Structures are given as structure tokens and as C-alpha cells.
Image 1: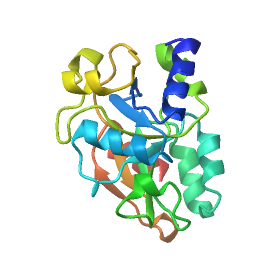
Image 2: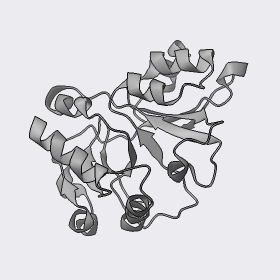
Image 3: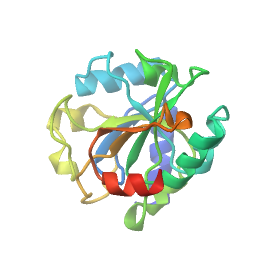
Length: 201
């Protein structure tokens, strides 16, 4: 991954395009979370129903927290402990931010901040937020290499960033909407084990 790759990624997403890119877990698809055309294309490429929300990914923790100033103090502290990492955090979204990512549940927002190290480290400098979902047909297998991504998806995206082989296990999804009241729940087991979450939360 080079600075030129990151710049191309930012141009693609900012223009409402759909990019295939490496995260810290599996390959994903990304577009501008404020672009209806881009979001519609991403869902069409995945053959995913609009009744299933997507996550918003930032490439550093500080911009993510700045974009969600209404987070209560306990939840904000939990986010600071957990991210960046191979997690998708489901948070309360009382201001209805990033509505295209939250359909049909605008009161909840999925947040990702990947831990990008080694060859992927330059991508951590990306300065924008993206709506992201795994780069597979809805319900299909996750891809750890570009070559494992469905050929139709590779043909339909506007940009392909090849980050080499990834770990291949998707993010763990954790519901923190009740964290201020002492409640949290693992919605999907994934790359981060429950014991690690229990230690942090």
C-alpha cells in the first residue's frame, strides 16, 4: 500500500465511486456514506437488501469520536479502549447521523476503525469516512485475497486496492447501545474473542 494508493482511494470514494479495499480483517467495499448513488451501487454490487444496515468506517479513532460528539461518557470511554481494532461497534445514534448507513434503524449506528499495520499502515492516513461492507455477495464467503473476491464484484467496482493476504476472519460485532446502563452484547463472533471484550468492558 502506497500514498498514491490511498490518494486514489480517497478520490474514488469522494466522487461517489465504489472501491474494493483491504481492512484489518477481510476485503471490503467502500463508498461515500453521504452519496445515495454510491450507497445504492454498493448494495447492488453485493446484491444486498436495503433492510440490512452497513457500518461507517473511519481510519483513525479521533475523527470517529469527533463525528459523534453526543456519545455518553461511558460509551465514549469504551470506544477509546476498543478501537482501533477488528470490531464493529453498534452505538446509539440519537442525532440520526449517517442515515444511509443506518437504514432501516436510524437510531443505531455501526462504527468501524480498523487497526492497519505493516503493509496496510498508509491506509490509516485516509482522511475520510466510508460506508463499508464486506466484499462478497450477500451471504457469501469473506475474502482474504483479492483473487477470492467474486469476479462480478471485481468487475463492477471503480477501484481495486490489493493489500495482499489478510487474516480472513470478519470483525466481531458488539452492541454497545446499552453500555451506559451496564449492558453489552456480542451480536457476531469474529476476530476479537469474547474474553478480550470482557477484559476491556
